[in-house]
Image (tube, rainbow, N blue to C red; front, side):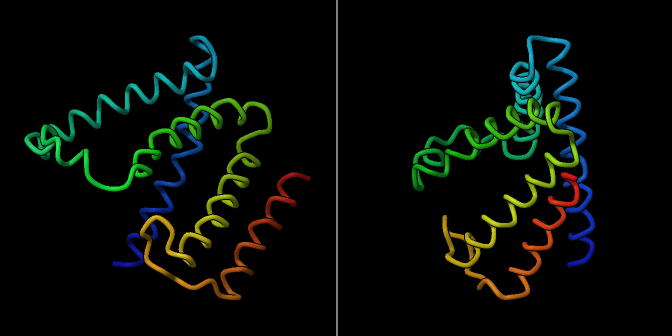
Length: 147
């Protein structure tokens, strides 16, 4: 099962550059990359609203669900908007391969720290030499992609 999830995760990750290039094209047809990102988020929000109504409609209207927990859990939407907006714009400037190589490197580096220190309630998973080497190889890949 672990490997099935890894394969699915690979393919989910593979569609992110597709999303970025589609958002960029949408932005070119509208008022720019930020509008493309906004319309993408609006479409996604409508789909997520419909799915949530089908799966757990009654739970959506329980105010207690939205008022408990630390304040920073709400930053995910802000981070997502900044990410999609920025990537929608920057992939046109530096290309898809470099953009997403840098995205992956940033994700891996911060993920190692989140795992190691258990930030935001994540399970603690110690940084090892092997993980550091893996991150360094990704950075090496960026250098090769940039050339």
